[in-house]
Length: 279
Image: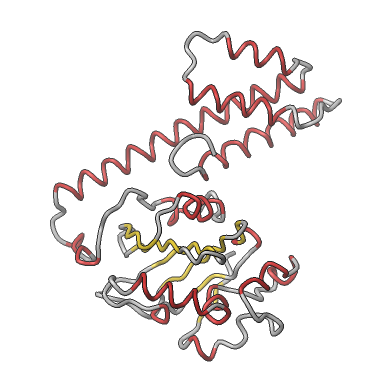
């Protein structure tokens, strides 16, 4: 179950981070057990790095003068929130609100160059994107979330909505709103079909690997496919390479278990990718 932290006033949240932390860089030195014990959260970032809170408030300002301390909830940070130089977090409003909306916020922050991406979601899960739309920040956010994070998976990465549209969905939707929703539905359905196909391909590739089919044989068979799609074929090549990083096992039970693990991991990685099948 997701562990939560509630803080009414950020300045008094002295127990939200370990006593020995003096900067955001220290978070990278924590042991796994300290993450498990919820030693750090999004509120810790606000305490440890003034550039983080200044940058966050600057990006939130056009959104109805929303500020960092308008968020009263944050999740505990985990190892997955540390994506190389980028640290990610999630804030939301439980008791606070703006225009009768409880805003949720996903944030990716480059601790070195201070770039920041802020994704806001309203009650109806409409998306508002603030800050730097750099792909590496988007990738860091995506890779830091669990595959079954339904709220995060509802993000429309192409959204151009602004604060003036907040709450408008309660009335009659505009033509653009309907087009956006239709495009979002299509993208979700298409991605689902691709990921189901990725599962089947990964299952086939690993089964062949465990049955003694050589890597060369699998690659050559793929090259000779007259109906191959360039991008999809590159993806299949990558799956074959990954499959042969795994040793061949002896018993049927081991072969079955390893094959299914490879297929499931491929399926999950597919859903975590940003805009294409290839993670």
